[in-house]
Length: 350
Length: 183
Image (tube, rainbow over all chains, first blue to last red):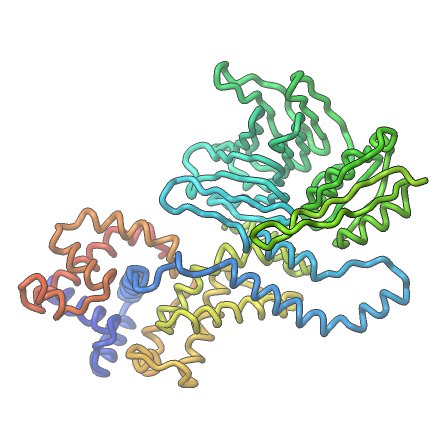
């Protein structure tokens, strides 16, 4: 008897869900639902399952990247209109200020153009093309920012150990979970954390790996498959580690960490950095090949902050504030009609 | 996305951080479009509704007060827009009549409603544990969109039989997923 009753209600629910119920039937269902909290929950859960089972529309066919670019564009346009007066005031005050739109533009492009997700395998891979940046949320809620030209491999769902593979530069804000360590594996080192904020720079063509810790604690281990994992060092907040892959030497520095993670907010910060590193960073950031044609210049120490400037603006400022001059080479046309990468040559100011 | 993370992302959005906004967008967009589709039954309008909700989220970020979870807030906004859209007769489908006549049956308590990505896999796993005939009837109807009549013809059984099998499948799914689902 009870089964029979339940079945009648079940049919009533389904007819409502697939749109074949009469008005009377809908009313009857409504009465049944309102008669108890248990009925209410039963109905809501069944409706939820029923609707999620609908595969007429496939989430894979939704173009998230295009939608995001579109929304960022709408937002920027409405802001531009609102801020005209504000911009004028800033100009009068002669503050060197940034086109605010640029951040959104870069983020939009970084995600939009090149999120390569393979749904067939357990691992996803994201590649961020040169000249753009991108960010993503992992299945445990941790957030990763990826710098220009970087690659991250990560599982769709973490198992016991939260492990990702990084080539290039990434900034990690790890969700705290002491039971499940979070490991960033690079070519030579593994960085282990539980809930922290840190930056790892391990480019394919770099001979050194740089790790910066902002908050919490991380452990750096050698990533050598032949041997057991070899402990290298712990890092404390505001410490910066440089690890030489050729010699295995490392240095720890206590210093302001801002400049190491500024890239994620669209800033370039230099604090007594050697010109050779400065131009490398600028080149990576704007996807421009920069050649430094003077040995003396390489070790010149430079200090500046660029925020959302165009490449041309950065070069002009660099020229104004250091003993350099530069020329940009003509770009060649490739067979497919596109241009070769921009190339700039820097030399000593005469 | 965890509660802690949501909170810090919201804080950042409030001060105009577009990177944080992008993170939230990417995390929820597909799921919200799938949710809008349950009302609208049409992809493009559903996408426009969700995009509109995100633009509003940004425009109102400074005065925003979210008391529920962010997920629930976004779903609620999408749901309200969908119902508005149906009410203003911009969308007509065989469900819209029911939605207007019996709003109580269709307006979800968004705090407990589960998103596509949270539930889809689990449905597939539980379905595997059902007898083939029952799994098949449910899959042909829900996944492939065949009507009971079409399934009955294909399997050479009565429509009533299909109706019973689909009911059994839904009942079984709910019984096995209820503890996993939000109360």
